[in-house]
Image (tube, rainbow, N blue to C red):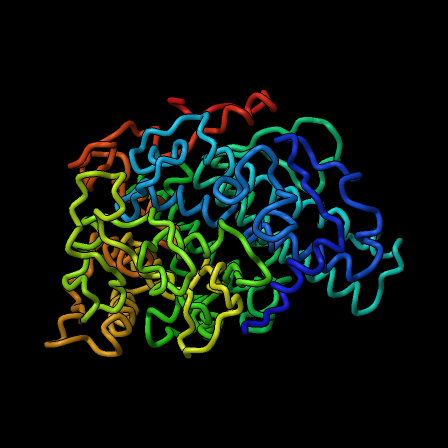
Length: 542
């Protein structure tokens, strides 16, 4: 059975602390009276709220899979979780995922035709703002003055003070998601007075610089890489987020990827991806093991994960969703008690693998290959099934939930493979401080692992210097990172998400694919949120 301190805290301490929803009225500051005064009276109380800050990425409330939801008025399992909402936003609009269900507006995601009244978009926005609010609450209560007034001192006070940097990172990460997905956000920080005043708005450029500043300020306060317990953030996590942000800086800051203004950011992407690479992480042999029930054993490659446990973090919206939604009648092969028969992939992703059976490239974790053509989106039997996230242990041992209702798989937010890919792309985009030879070496490390610690028959997986180009990087990102929440951002960076330059099955609701309005490069600010807070503006076109 997996035992992780963070998972125990998320379930055990939260209920004891009495933390309840701070977002029953969207876009209103959380009120102090929603947090019992006793919560922060002891060091244990602080630890419980710290667990809640982490837990907002894995759970949806304080009562397991359902009940006491953080976000009121929405379906707790499908609309308010972070992982499920993030997956829907980042994968469903692309060639990597398509859904057969008719749940409300869910099919609008792959069709690239959502509106500001979409409940799934409302849930994701609300989840992110809620997570920011909980982080702010913790930071307000974890000042030196507050600790002193509560007679918390010594090593306990030092631990709480050190944890502030972690919470600032988590707040920055949630703000990054808001920046990436929505292009703007409700703006609330720990320095703002708590009350009924409606918060203001922060735009995309301002968010970028705010997040960047936060990550720079906490750099020396976070634990060095590999020195903090698994599932908590350290310096390398902050470096990884900065590398990801810098690679996408032209999109966030509003200039072309070829604009000279982009070069310094590509240089920074090289610098910070290399800092992570040099911090001692290693690729784990056996790609499928990264997404199995005991993937906590693969921490040599993981920089930051959202820890999920079949007993301690039960949810219908964390990695349990990634397994059950992909499984059908073959659910036993996924290590689950049932399959929801909903999500699969399109031929456009499958065709990026020369041998999609997985006999050569182990990353091709597919089944139902004979039915890759989708004539009816609503028919789960049509389309290639993805068997990437599997609730089975690589060592053959038992999972924590012996009923197999909930998954043990931790969700990889940052892993070493992404840093290799960021470095290579930033070099090709003319960032300085890196070189093409090193970039090729990193790409071949991925290929070597993918082909089973070899380059395959006749060295077909080996890349040569002349092979390196931006299209190769984009395709390699698809092969390496599919279903991990990257694809929408990648396609936007390459100007391919909404344009007709690159089409895939059922893009824009058309079987052969079609270009759509460029407004769909961003999600709209939910209408309900704007009704609650008229100070917020809407994205163009909605």
